[in-house]
Image (cartoon, rainbow, N blue to C red):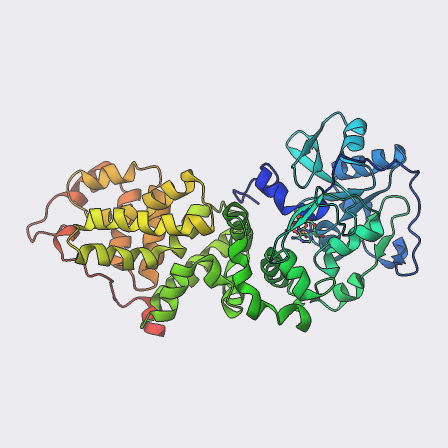
Length: 472
Ligand code: ATP
Ligand code: MG
C-alpha cells in the first residue's frame, strides 16, 4: 500500500488519538499485571477467537511482552484487534497499558512521548512505530486534566484510568476489544464481539453525548461501516442526519486528515455516497456539494464518481494515491463555476482560473487544511487542463516536461470519459507521449487547415459522444 499519508508523524494525528490520552501529573503506580476481573467483562479465551500471534507484528509483540515483563498490563486494542478478527491485515498496531507514558519511556529507550493535551508514547523500530497509550480514566471535575466546551466537545482529556474505564472512552463496540498478551484472550466489556459477529457499528454509550463529545466520530462511523461492510446500528445512525453541523467546530487540520482517510483508503466512492446520504459531505466540501445539488446535468457528479472509482481501483492495485489528484477532482466543478464568474467580470481565461483557484482554495482550506504542497499540486493539475488544447509548436514539449504532467493528463482523461473534455485530445496526448521525436515534430507542426486544437473555440464544457453520455 502506498498511500501518501504519513500516519502518526504529526501532532495533528496525535490529536486524533485523544481517546488514549494520559497525563504525567500523577503516574499510576505500576502494579503487577492483574487479570481483568469484572462481572461486566466477557473474556474470550484463545480457543474462542481466531487471533493468532503469527498475525501480530513482531514489533508490537515485543512491546507487549516487554511491558508485561516490566510488570504492567499490556493489550492490543482498537482497529488491529477488529481487523484481525476479520482475518484482515491491520494497518497498524495500537497498545493499551496501565503504564504511564513516562513509565513506558523507562521500559523502551527507543521511545518518545508525544502530544500535550493527549499524551501518548511512541515506540520506534526504525520507521515502524508502535503507539502505546495509557488507559484513560473516567470523567472528572479536574479542569486541568479534562476540558469540555459548551457543545460538550472534549478539548482536553488527560486522566489516568483502568482498562475497565478506558473501554467506555472508546468510540465503537468493535473498537473496544482488548487482546491480552498475558493469556491471549480477548476482553470485551461492551458487546463488541457480538456486534462484530453481526457486522454492526454501534457507538458505546449515549450516541448524542458521544457525537457531541467528538463529532469526528460521525465520520469514523461512516468510514468503518464502509471499510468493514458493516451496518450502522439504528441508534448510531439516526443522529447523523441531525448533528452534521457539529463538524464545523473541528480544527481544519484534523478534518484534512480525516478526509484523507475517508477518500484515499480504497473505499472512496462508497464513502462519498454514504457521507452525502447523511449530509456530512456538505460540511466537508460545501462548494462541491452545492454544485452537485444545483447542477442540471449529472456529469459533474459522473466525473467525481469516476475520479473516486479510479482512486479505489488504483488502491486495490497497490498503486500510489496522491491526495492532490482527488482533491483537485473534488473541487473541479466549483473551480469551473468560480472561473466563469471571473470571466463574466472581464478576466481573461488564465487570470480567471487563477483567481478562481484562490477563491476556492481559500475557502476550502478553512475547513480542511491542505498543506501548501498539496494546494500547489492541485493548481498545477487545474491550470494544465487548458494547456492541453495547445497542440502546435513548442508548447506541447514544454508541457510534457512539467512535473505534474502525468497527473494532469490522467485528470484530462477522466474528464473526457465523463463528457468534460474532448476524447480526441486525450488520444492525441497519449500518442504524443509515446511517440519518437520525428513523429512528435510532425504532430506539432502547424497543419494547412489550422489544425491546432487551440484554434478551435473551446466550449465551456465539452459534450462529446463519450461512453458515459451514451449511457445516460
Ligand atoms: P484504523 O487505524 O484502521 O483506521 P482504528 O480503529 O485503529 O482504525 P485509530 O484512529 O487508529 O482507528 O484509533 C485507535 C483506537 O482508538 C480506535 O479503535 C478507538 O478505540 C480509539 N479511538 C480513536 N479515535 C477515537 C475517537 N475519536 N473517539 C473515541 N475513540 C477513539
Ligand atoms: Mg489504528
